[in-house]
Image (cartoon, rainbow, N blue to C red):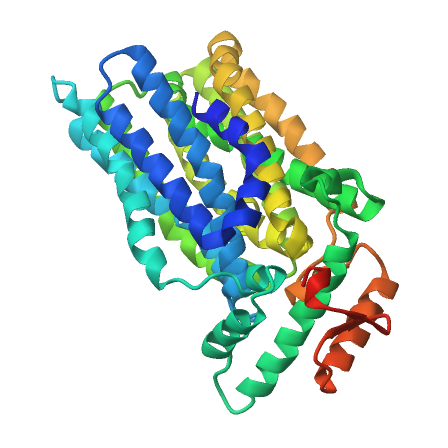
Length: 441
């Protein structure tokens, strides 16, 4: 139901984001998730509990899409990749809290064994509501809504440090205005029509779709949702021991995930994704062999090897599908399509989760370790897709990336418009023609 709720919300995300802006969409989503957590905590029957899961799932994509976009659009250009990478790594903090809470409550005899973890789901959303007061709106959204003076003030406050800060802000502001002017000229009235409007946009949405699938179909959800089942298959059956391993795995994810998020964005994106997928394949092959040896020979050493490879898997997965996912999504989509692009990525994430929810446990019960062979083959598909289709976006500003698929001609239009505006013109110029605020900028 959680994934179903998320799927139901995806069509509405671009419209709400465009109308409310990044900040207020995040706040609205936070209230929805607080309501879902409250209903889940107070659940008196199965239907009430399932509705609460649907409501929580409905709210989360609004927050994810707009939070990742807001971070990317607010951050200083040099710091943006690291900030968006840390965004996804912060998931491990919640994972540790969840694992620690369930470890402390699983032995309770009363219904509070699940009501306490349910109630704690509201805490992150409450923090977002409280601290969003101190967070500025996206200057790009403000410019798109003809609130250019507010956008310029935000850029001046947060990007205007140093000796050349004022000149940097002038250039950045001119780039943003000119780029958004050109984007709005090409945008379709029906928001989702942008998905198929031209080859460049179709390629962007293809990349968003496969990225969403790959973040869920790289074998990671076997560990995230069925680690207990994996441990039972290798002979670890004591509940307390299993809970300790799950908690320690969550802590390990944070320990390795944060440094990787700080380091991975410093390198080219293609190299990061290829290192991730090739490393995941190597781990899965050895993990499969160790699992087979455990079942055939009942070897305790093989069981220990499986646990080691599960921990090693996190290192390679975090390099690409954790650290770079939202960094890459923010980079490949221009402002006008960014919410739609990340929303579509979330759509394929939830489709992947449906597969994981209903197929993985059945396959694991039916064929055991042999099911891992499927992921060994699938990750080969991921490697080929990354190598053939993923373009490089490293070390470029969002405005420089806005028309990376459209060709050099569009990029020259932006450069001319920026140059005209920096020469003192009051309006934005694209290809020598004036584009006023009434035209949508």
